[in-house]
Structures are given as C-alpha cells and as structure tokens.
Amino acid sequence: MISFTPFEETHDACLPREINLGQLLSAISLAFDFAERAQLNHARRVAYVSLSLGELLGLGEGTLRRVLLAALLHDIGATESFNELKDEELVPTGVVYQHPLRGAEMVAGLPQVSDLGPIIVQHHERWGGGGYPFGLSGEAIRLEARLLHLADRFELVYAAAGWEQGLARVERGRGGDFQPELVDAFFSLARIPKVQLDLEERNIGRVIGWEVDRLAQVVVTAELCRVAGVFAGLIDNRSPYTANHSQGVAQHAGVLGRRLGLESVASLQVAALLHDLGKIGVPSRILNKPGRLTPEEYQVVRVHPYYTEHILRQVKGLEDIVPWAAQHHEHLDGTGYHTAAKAGAIPLESRIVAVSDVYQALTSDRPYRPGLAVDDALGVMRQMAAAAHLDPEVVQQLAVVSS
Ligand SMILES: [Fe+2]
Ligand SMILES: [Fe+2]
Ligand SMILES: [Fe+2]
Ligand SMILES: [Fe+2]
Image (cartoon, rainbow, N blue to C red; front, side, top):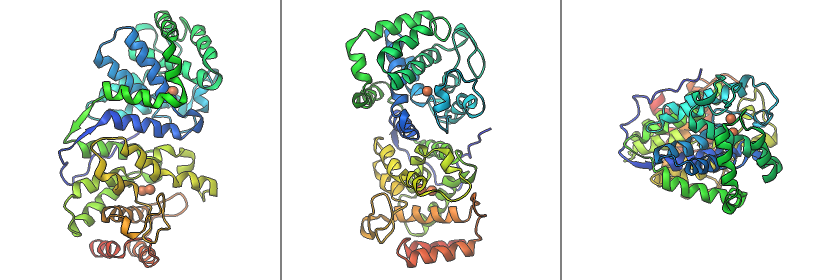
C-alpha cells in the first residue's frame, strides 16, 4: 500500500498561484518515459491515439480531457522496467500486476484530476475479459480505459516493429482485447495521412503539447503546496529509503528560509518539495540498490536535477522556483551538477535547498548505512562547507536551529 504524507502543518500557507496542471502532468509523463530509454514517448503516443479515437467517436470535451491526461499518466505506477509490460504472453504478476492499482493511487491525491484514477486502474482490462487487475469485460470497463488499452497495445508494437505491425496487432485484438467498434474507429483513424506523421518521434512532442494547451488547461489556484506535496510523495515513495525525503527537505528549507529573512518562504518550500522531481526518470532498481552504485548507475542518478529543470520549465507559473529546485546539487566552487554554476550564479534559495537536502539525507537511513546523529551530520556538512561545496552561512544557521 502506498501512503502519501499529507502536507505538514509546519509548512507555510499555500501562496495563491495559478499553475497549469496539465502541463505539469504532461512534462512528468515524458520524464517518466526517460526511465526506460526504449519507451521514450510511449505515453504521448498512447495519448495521441486514444484522444484521436475519442474525437472520432464524438466524445465531449470533459471526456477527452480525461482521456488525454489519463493516457499521459497511465503507466506511472510502473516504477520498473517496461519490458515485462511488453510481453503479452506473460501472466502479469508482482510489479506489473500492481502498476494500474499503484498508478490510480498516485493520482488520487491530485486536485481536479482525481477522476483519472478509475481510468488508469482499468487500462489493462480486455473487452473479452481476462485482463488485469480485475478481469472485467465489455461495458463494465470504462470507455476511456478501453480506448487506452487499444492505444497502449498498438503503441508497443508500433514502437518495436513499425506501423503495419501495429495495425495488424489491433486487428488481431478485435473482440478479444478490444471492442469491435473501437477497432473500426481505429482503422478510420489510420487512413488519415497526418496520423502517421504526428506519431513520429520528431513530431509527437509538439502535437501533444498543443493538445495539452487546448484541452488540459487545468489551472490550479491556491493549491500549489498541495499539488507539490502529492508530487513529492510520488517521488519519495519510489524508494523505502527516501520516504518523506522531500517533505523533510521542505521543512528544513522553511526553517532556514525564515531564519535567513527570505520573503518567499512558501515558494521556497514548493521548490524544496519538487527538487528531486527529475528522479522520476531514474529506474527504481538504481534508486533502491543496497550498496554502492557503479559509475554508470551513478551517471544515471546524476541527471535527475537536469530533468527537474526540464519538467518544471514546461509549466507556466513556476518560473521563479525552477532554479531553486533544480540547482540543489551545485557546489559553490563550480564542481557540482548539472550546470556547474559557481557561487555568484547560485541563488540563496538553491543553497538553502542544497543544505536541507544533504542534512535530510545524512540524518536518514540509507541501504548502506543508518542515519547519522545530528552532530555527526553537522560535522560532515561543515567539511562540505569548508570545501566550498555547501554555503557556510546556511550551514551555520542550520547548526544554530538544530542544536
Ligand atoms: Fe500499463
Ligand atoms: Fe503503457
Ligand atoms: Fe537530488
Ligand atoms: Fe534530494
């Protein structure tokens, strides 16, 4: 069972702010596809096909919006390799069997899009029965989920073997996997010349960007901290070792931000909640590895702030917090990542998130060591400050508030 830590009372009140949740979800779905290089754009192509089918069938705008967003997030509960999901002969077990359930739980806490969960949970149900997790059949499966399932099966074959094989896969599923009327609609769609072009790697990102702008203007006001808290949980829950990490970083950052006289402590805390968002692109097997990472695995982990930046930059309304969140592994001497910025180019807010991040990590248990006592953690951090990695003033303030 996944549990999300509710937004802690120690956080400042949410600032009223407008953000486009559709853009955020779309950006997250792409970052999630980074976790499996072979699956790049899987979610976007599934979204495109299911949305186009929905339009062909004359579905209303509210339904189309649900189809688009649910498709973008449909596999978000699959935190591991997608290889097993591709194997249609395999009887799904374990993490594969769980992924529709996990995905539905993950989106349940998001404001205004909680109606996506019932769709996501059914995206592997088959029209003729025998799907998972419930073994539903026929119209007991929601229409949106029926569209998703067809688009999903098509996309996996299309991505691996091309257009013609993809079409053959859909035809093969007529009546068993897919409702016959939807198969007919799919072949009407497939006759439209632009559909093949839109699906191409170089085009699909833009096309889905337009659809998100058109249909998914889910503008959330005054709930930014709540939304950020849900996303923080989504990241933290990928590993038992990082449970509550982002929440903890946000709490420390709030205390330090107030102490250092920042005006926008609430925004700083949102940045802290979202700082590791790019980890959605790091496979769980690496995040949860009990032991030292290989150099290659470490390289994969190191890209996460880069993707934090890429995700957040796609969302209008979050511009100010992007560097605060994304620069949390920079060092004052320029030896950090991902921009190798030096002291003058690293805002105080980023330095606070960096200090809070290290402190939270050091004082928590990890696969390879138990959490450090406060004094020991501060000792390590003073050394990091002396080496011009962390900001000495921020570390000093941390020592004051934590002793
Ligand atoms: Fe799936
Ligand atoms: Fe999928
Ligand atoms: Fe990080
Ligand atoms: Fe972190």
